[in-house]
Length: 119
Image (tube, rainbow, N blue to C red):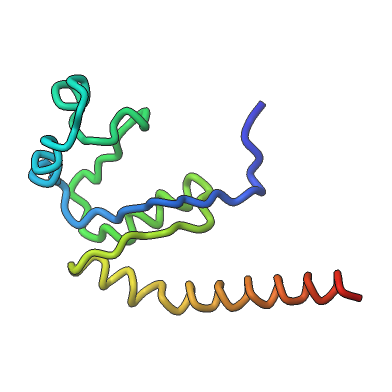
């Protein structure tokens, strides 16, 4: 049975890459890892949760690359971490209006639903 295409997925912990190689960040994180397998075998700290670790393959626009992957996997909504870098700032400029509009639409739909239940 295939996954239904009409159900949007919500990603609750999305990070937009800001460069291809993040090994320096992973290395600084390794002392916090408690198990040997994570320290020795994994190329990134949360690898145990993923089948494949995405590779950006030298893309120029990490925001577009991320959004393309969201669309490919039917991810409708994502909670995105914000870092003080150009990539996060670009994403905020591009999508902030969409996010605010979507939030307003969600509030309006919830209000209409609760109003209908009251009557």
